[in-house]
Length: 87
Image (cartoon, rainbow, N blue to C red; front, side):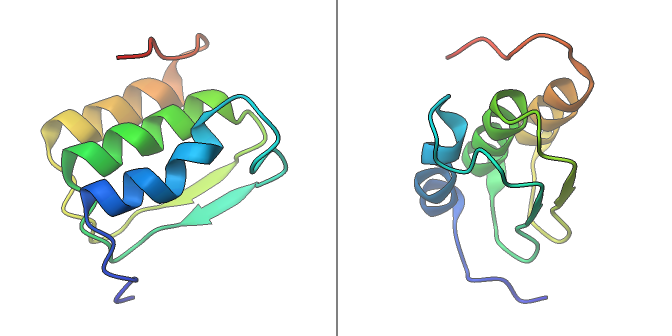
């Protein structure tokens, strides 16, 4: 998958409304953001989406240039029973 070419900041802007605890994306069960260079910023926003959306069951993020900070945030959000702290 080549993705849309969403860099970290663009991916964060796209995912941001889903990370809020409002109605945007409340029923989303799967996200495929593969092939987009998320980097740390996009990875951290994806982690916030995971924490805010309990209905989300599958996330595909292959070939996303996830760096350590973004990848760790995603893992923490996926395994944590508590919502992520806002930073």
